[in-house]
Image 1 (cartoon, rainbow, N blue to C red):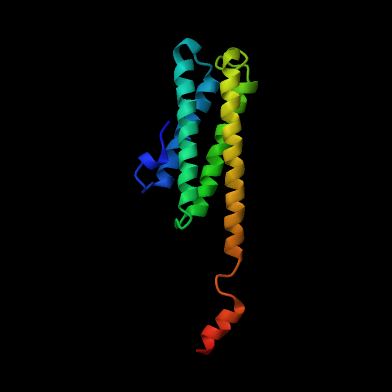
Image 2 (cartoon, rainbow, N blue to C red; image 1 turned 180 degrees about the vertical axis):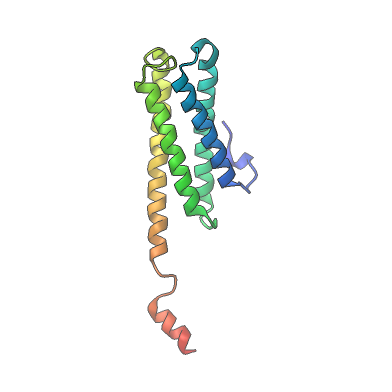
Length: 152
């Protein structure tokens, strides 16, 4: 697993979220196309692990950078990515395609574990967005402080 402290502290969240969305769509497309599991199962599971790791890293990075200029926008983008990822995991668990838990019951534990990770991150994203939205509503300078500043 990649650790955030191993990465350069300057992260381009917008580009990284865009690229992870491409990977998510690629896996979605693969599930729709019914690939041969002998050829694609191992790589698909590696991709899902990679997506899970990167979504976690991006969330950690956004949580650590509370003063990032477009943080709220990136929280929304990451939330959307997490929602898409959760759909893929649900499709793995409930779908009947060539690459699914139905065809490969041994994947159930791993996919369920990843689904739990995803739901936890999604909830954290919701909570962080709500906290951030609330802090934007609260005035930076109180009415009394503003009056005092204007009198000077």
